[in-house]
Image (cartoon, rainbow, N blue to C red; front, side, top):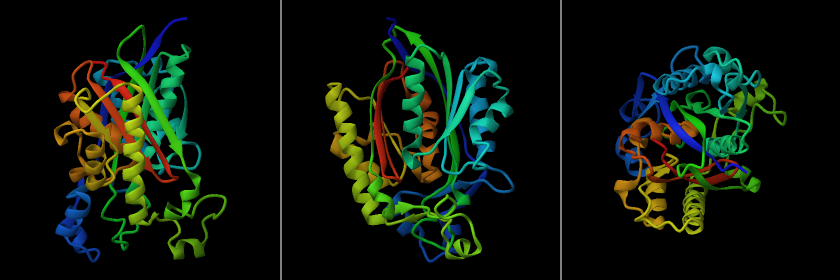
Length: 329
């Protein structure tokens, strides 16, 4: 039986032009730049203005990676889009993206796992590639978080931004590169701490639900912070143990960009120094599904072929996971 690895062969990214600074937020809610930076590490975030949805940003990121890798969209077998802010409930965003890109021979679907969504997306795409049935998968993490943020709620509006990242995953036989291992977990009992109650079949949109603010993000920050640090470090530690990795043998940690303090605490528990940690939360905020692929895009030029890279994320659900890969180009 052939040994097939799923190897990242290219990355792309897109963030909107509009920059929402902490100083501007000071005029909108009762907050201060110093308070935001000290607690989150965020200085600014990007916002998609106008009558545009997540598919607009997803297309920008996807086209970039296709052009960089000289890939014909008709040769793409699979497109998975991880997002919590789809353009519509259906058709799903990945379906719209297939049409925009001209990916006529792909099948596609969306994946929803909150901030862990892109890791779930990568894990699923890897399984399809390793099956031998598919050669090229396009994976996109995208969110227009500004569409579900209450800009009168200072506990959440300071955190989130909009953006998209895309990855081209290809099959390579007997390769030493690509995805090596993964661990994913879920805890559905955590619903009360991080959720958006409105918009599903349990609570369809109504005048009352809109007036109550049920279609905005709700987060109990202290619980989420504590659990994120514990779960992210535990599961990344499990990946390290299973693959005999140490802080010295890992070249890069690519964590979900939820909060600078969460990132720092996770890296410290893993024994990874700050210079090996990809961080761009200061300029993009938390773009949810976009954070990890945007980090890959931002730091692409610093990665070297064969680098040991550990990805880690934690999100609403609760969902969390870690993936170990060897950089493929």
